[in-house]
Length: 169
Image (cartoon, rainbow, N blue to C red; front, top):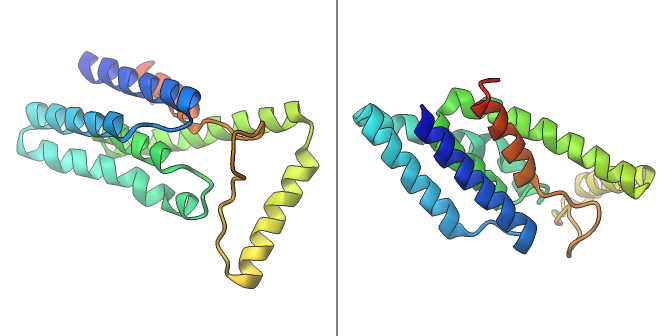
């Protein structure tokens, strides 16, 4: 079990560093992770490994597609969780997604408090959904550029991954 921990930590750490430095997770990094994940699953579980990989990889996409649809979560973050699902399997990646969302929420609240604009963010959030419900127009939730209230969700995924390595779930 040591190998998936090390490889998963390497992939998530690299993705988080890329996200922090260039504000995106390169597709090369994601594809490398998927290849390593399917290879690991095939070597350890043979034919069943491919099914295990597919279930784990698809679960984060199914769970989080709506957040991507409204541009509240980036595609790279969902693909990163998909890579982890390939290693961890569906049951573990479900907890990884849950803990990532919890850590992301904590980071978001911390950033909003530090920026001192909680009422403004809540107003923006409610107005966003009012506009969508009234007009049906889907616009990106996040404003363009690197803004103080933006968090890098890959950091929350890294924190969740550390819980998995520590045996928390």
